[in-house]
Structure formats: structure tokens, C-alpha cells
Image (cartoon, rainbow, N blue to C red):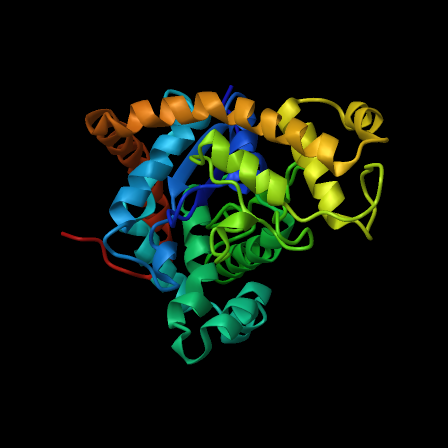
Length: 336
């Protein structure tokens, strides 16, 4: 029986953090058992904002190592680097020529990031949802694991696929598979330690806002101790007036692998002075095996290169077929 395919990726900028792990990677670990998983490092996306070229390659390998350290199995999942396959950029250009500009101008994340960059905003920042569509549609996934904040980008991907299918395909033989979103509630949005209304992010200038997966225990404990809270006695979920309380309880629930009901009962009468050490301990315990395995992998570059070479070859065998099909439909000649 052929398994359905999923596809996802993370930009290799800076250290991956707890939000990346709980919101995405831990989800992939479960999904790789049931699906044909294609997981990549989105390094072409990494330069849509100012970046350090001295770190890009090293960070890309570290993200690959982090995937494996967290539990992604290279024997089950295809792990590859986006820029190692030219099909991503080539298909993105073809999509650019067929995507209306106003579809991109309505993207919420572009508006938010453009405000931060001011006059330095690049065409790439406006256009990266088209590259993202190429990333996805090249591999014909059935499902794409996304957070709530990425649903708009997946809708654009679906719009592009439907547009090409209508213009260049047929109802009986569509040109591109139109993927569906796969969203999980628990862990889908891990929020900042500094502001419970904002998502935990690598781009936040404050290190205090996030827990990096490579943070040593003493740093984790200090960050949790300083995490923003309130003056209420007793802790409970789902109170809009207490976003930090909900976020920290949610982290404790996910890391201690308890049910929501069990955590609610355990913490109902606690104060922050009693709860934060428990959360810090749960976090240190959960991340310890990941950090140990990550250190081992980062010391074995040959192994990582072999995994990425194998992943590139498998990814190319799928991506190049899709790219050729699209180019044929658009009327391009094949190389002689």
C-alpha cells in the first residue's frame, strides 16, 4: 500500500527553539511512522531577510542534525537541503510568471515583516510564498503540516496549483496535486516567554523570549525563572486575560507528557514560585537526550553529508518529474 506523502521545512537561521520542536518537529516524528515524509532545510528562504553568510552553511547542517537528534529517522524520512535542488528556483520562476501580483500583496506576513525592514525590504520577501508553493508542489504531497499562521500561504499554494490545472491541465489529468493542510491543536503555537500573545520566534532580538534546543540546563532554568507571568494565585488554561499562564501550562503539559486535565488539577492552586521550578525541570529532562545526540551528530560531518546526499537524490527523483511535467505543459522544449 502506497503511503500518503507529507512535506515541511524550517529555515536554517539561528538555533532551533522549543517552538520549532513542539510546534513542528515533534509532529513530524509521529507522522513519519504513517506517511512518506519529505523534510528539508529552507535555506533559499533564509536570505529573504538580512543574514550572516558566514553561518548559513553551518546552520543548515546543524538544523539537519537537530532533525535527527529530535527523532527524525533518515531511514523513514527524506531529509534534504532546498538549495541543493535547482528545481525549487526554476519552478518558482515559472509560478512567478503565472501568479497575479495582488495575490502576494495581500499576504499578512509580508506586511508585518516589510514594516520592520522599511526601505530595505526585498523582492524576495514579497515573493517567497511563490517559492514556498514551488517547494510544496514539486513533491506532490497529500498533506502539509502547518501552523495557523501559515494557513494563508498554503491557500496561496492551492490557488497556484488550481490556476495551473485550469489553464494547462484538465479535469481528468490535473497538472499538479492540490495538497490539504494538516493542523494539530496541541503545540501548534508555542508563544514567547516575554509576551504570551506573540509566537516564539528566532527573529525576536531577545534571547529571553525563547528556549533554544541547545540551551544548557542553567540557561533554561534562568529563562523560565524570568519568564513573564502575572500576579494571580492559581494557574489555569484558556483564560484570554492570562496568555502567559496558558502558554507556560501548555509547555508543561507537552514536555511532561501529561493530559491537559492532569496538569490543570496539579497546578490549580499553585503560585508561580512553585510552578516555575517544575516547568524548568521538565524542560531540562525533555531536552537532555536531544542535546546529547545533537553533540554526537555535529561531531560526525561525514555521516550528515551522507544523509543529505541520499536525501537530495531521492528528492530529485520526484522533483524533476514534476518540473518536467510543468515545463512540457507550458510548451518548453526538452534538452537534446
